[in-house]
Structure formats: structure tokens, C-alpha cells
Length: 224
Ligand code: CTP
Ligand code: CA
Image (cartoon, rainbow, N blue to C red; front, side):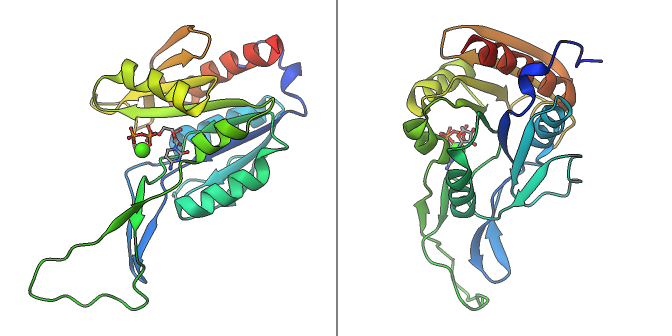
């Protein structure tokens, strides 16, 4: 019932969604990752497909069912996600980056399972590439939507990312609050637009939040 408006504009639109965490390998049995469940990105992919869009979902490792009518490309590391997203980018109309991409990865991958010693362990980490920022530098007519999970100074931090990554919208949520963000089924988002427009999405299900976000993207598609 949220899909009440005319969704004609979504037909044939190519939408790329990223979701879930990435896993950064330490050795054959260990990795660094984060608490992302993938639920927000999966809800966006599902709802965009329901509106008639052609949806590709690039997903880190999650335990969710493939959304109906969506083409899923599974990936593991930030590097894998970077490569797949860049391969697909040119043909897309809309890119929504809901994935929680690792900022750092171990500088070296141990070929064999690490053995413990009596001393402490130090693992040297190096930066991953920022996928969204790279897309922002390459974008032609695509709409680019990012997410920002912040634990402090939400508005200021989120707005900086719009500029830095050349985004059309950033959806910010506070990971400091209960029932918001990682792992749960609900979310509360503040949308900041490059135009200066702001839209608050009050605490609701991730599906409804996805629909409200898609309504805003639809307006931008109609304006272009
Ligand atoms: N992102 C990305 N590639 C990365 C890191 C982040 O594409 N290597 C994307 C995320 O998918 C998200 C947006 O950038 O849509 C913001 O991610 P976030 O972690 O909030 O911001 P960062 O730029 O990584 O900055 P920081 O973690 O320091 O706040
Ligand atoms: Ca980050």
C-alpha cells in the first residue's frame, strides 16, 4: 500500500544496490567484518523491484533470502565489491550504497592458519578504496545515494560525505540509538540532499523506510 503513486518512471530503470558487510581475510579461517545484517539494502532492492525497476543487488555475506525478482551478485571483500560495482556502474540509472564497507583490511593475508604464540599479536591494516567516492568521480547521469552510520555529530558528518563523494542524497542514521540501524528490523533516517533539501524518515520498518527513500529518488528521476 506504500506503492500507491504512479510507478511508471521505474519501469526499465537500472538500479544497483549494495548491502551487507564486507569480510577482510586474515588467514584461511579468520576475517575482520562488522555488524551489518544487510536488511536495509535488501529491503531497498525488494521494494525497487516491486516498482518495476531492474535491480542488481551486490551483497556481502548475509543470512537473508534473495529478494524476489532481483539479480544478486554475492561478494566478500571491499575489493570484490569495488570491482563488481565499477563493472556495472556505467549502465546504471540509480546506485544506492547501503553496504557497510570495511575501511581497512589486513596488509598481508596469511596463507596458513595462524598459530598462536605467548606474546601479543599485531595485525597491520591498510586502507581499502572508497567505492562510493570513486563512483562520485565517475558519475555521468546516475543518481548516487549513500548511507552514513554515525555515532556522533550525525548531521555534520553526513553532510560532509555528500560533498566528498559527489552524492545526490545521503541517508544518515544514528547507530547510538536503540532500534535503529544495524541488525534490527527498524530504522530512522535523515535524508540530506545535495540541493539542501532535508527529509526525516521517522522510526519505522526498514521496508517502509526503503519505500519512503524510493519516493524521494523517484522525484529526482522525474526532475532530471
Ligand atoms: N563506502 C564505500 N566504500 C568504502 C567505505 C564506505 O562505498 N570503502 C560507502 C558506504 O557504502 C556508505 C558511504 O560510503 O554508503 C558512507 O560510509 P561511512 O562508513 O559512513 O563513511 P566513510 O566515508 O567510510 O567515513 P567514516 O567511516 O570515517 O565515517
Ligand atoms: Ca567507513
